[in-house]
Amino acid sequence: MNQIAARRLGTTALKVSALGFGAAPIGGFRATITEAEAQALLEAAWQGGVRFFDTSPFYGYGRSELRLGHFLRQRAREEFIISTKIGRDSFQHSTIAMMASCVRLNNHACALGFRAWISCLSMT
Image (cartoon, rainbow, N blue to C red; front, side, top):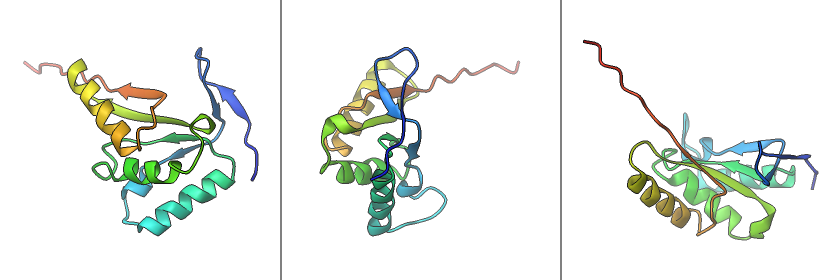
C-alpha cells in the first residue's frame, strides 16, 4: 500500500488523505459500471492510500453510498473519513437524509455532512 500524506481539514481536528475518492462514478454518474468494477476502483484507491471518500445519496439514487458502504464494511472505522450531502431544505429533512445515508453506508458515521442552501430570487 502506498501512503498519501494526510492534511488537517480546515479548522477541524479531522485529518484526511490529501487525495480523495469522488464516488459519483460508482453510483453510475455518466456511465453504468458493474458492482465488480466499482469494488475494483475502490480497492485500487485504498491500495493507493486514499482514505477520504466523498459520496452522495444523489449519485445513482443511493447506489454510490451502498457500494462505498459495502467496500468499507471490511475496514476499520478509524482508518477513513466519509463526506456526503444531506439535503437542500429543512433541518428535519436533512436529519432524516443523514440517517438514511448512514444506513446505506453500513452505519458508518459520516464525519462531514454537507447541506446545500439554495436561494431563489424573484424575477418580478
